[in-house]
Image 1 (tube, rainbow, N blue to C red):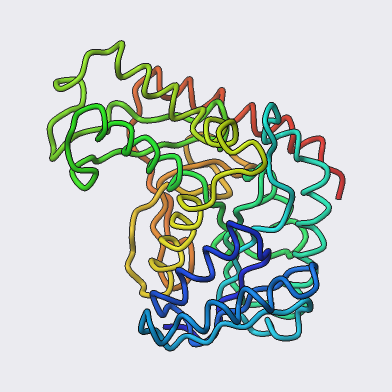
Image 2 (cartoon, rainbow, N blue to C red; image 1 turned 180 degrees about the horizontal axis):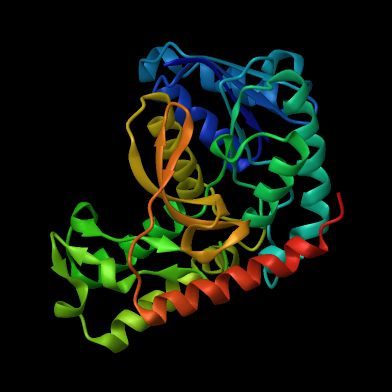
Length: 309
């Protein structure tokens, strides 16, 4: 347990993230901050009143300012507008870049030693904005992408094979968008290569469904986007950091030569511990996977170059 974790944004993703952090007792105090007056206060009070039933002692508070967030150990940034049907993650670029910039300035002032987990979309670029504005080292700025994309991939595979999701081992790298790279060469079921259990055509269809996993949910909801799985993914990252678990999780990390790339956030296998990003794991990729990762990196660089800070 750490002293304080702040969640910026009290919408569906933020509120669900705060609730899960509290229920897991990852911090003594969980702070939700949002510009909408009354929303974080009301949701935090509601969550705190669930504590006697759910059995957690983490205190949940809501605020419209950043003074209550001071000296947070971890800050999860979910602030921004959500996708609407027909809207890509990159369509959110300019609006959310301005929001994340303002949030990052506040965090830099009030919690200069915090570890940041960015959830706002387009995620890879927003992670860049947060790191650029705060000046934090790469070990303390991470994007939540690969954990979510991998969860979707694993869920679809488990459904197709009629097996437990617990037995699906998989990893999705690259940008958080249509060019993400599910690593088929590292996908298995209790150690059995996925290619021995499923025809290539079916596997290809699942890969494509994974890439459009968020858009599929947006299409159903019509007025919102996913939040149960994204919040779970962010909290899994928090848990590995708080408990110093050294989990190897696919996260958006700032590359400095890894995989032959530099100067961008991209989903790669990361070891997460109490200091944040402790190591980027470089795995051997097939030629097809390397080419796909390079293509995904290009798709991240384009909107990154368009951001004005």
